[in-house]
Image (tube, rainbow, N blue to C red; front, side, top):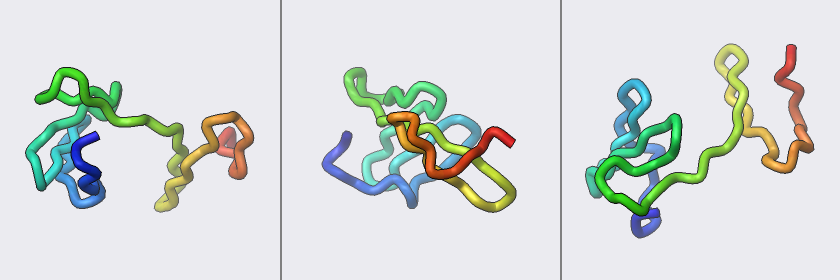
Length: 68
């Protein structure tokens, strides 16, 4: 949402992610930006199993079953 800067190098603290380029902070529960009223992240469903993180398909066609 902010000039395409990558967030994978951002600073993660509890439920907040901070962009190291711009200092924008995002609430990871809602995706809403704390500093910019109309900015937000697109949240994707995921599943964590051990050290693996799986992004689930938003259309419900899951390639990985995380129900177990």
